[in-house]
Length: 75
Figure 1 (cartoon, helix red, strand yellow):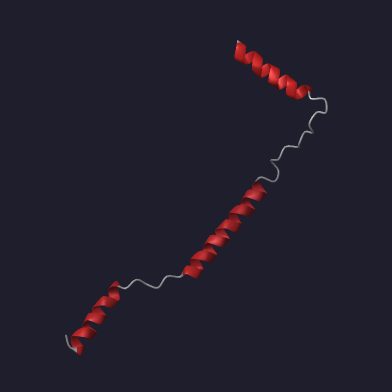
Figure 2 (figure 1 turned 180 degrees about the vertical axis):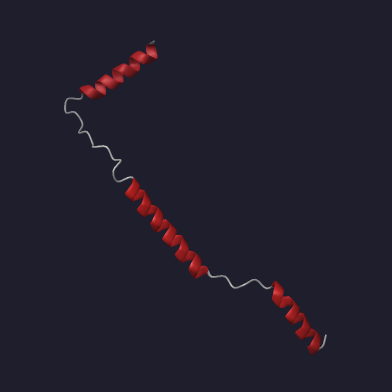
């Protein structure tokens, strides 16, 4: 293989070489997509939170749930 053959082979093989990867651009796109998703989720879920009901101090609520569950299981 002489120099002319090598140059011809190089020119033919240039078509098959993949373009260089742009890893930095891919990382930036992923970070932007993540932040956009987090922002959208926080905006859309902001008004849907129900107020938190404080727990009862006497424990009757927990006992009522336990007894109603036990009655349904025995029927």
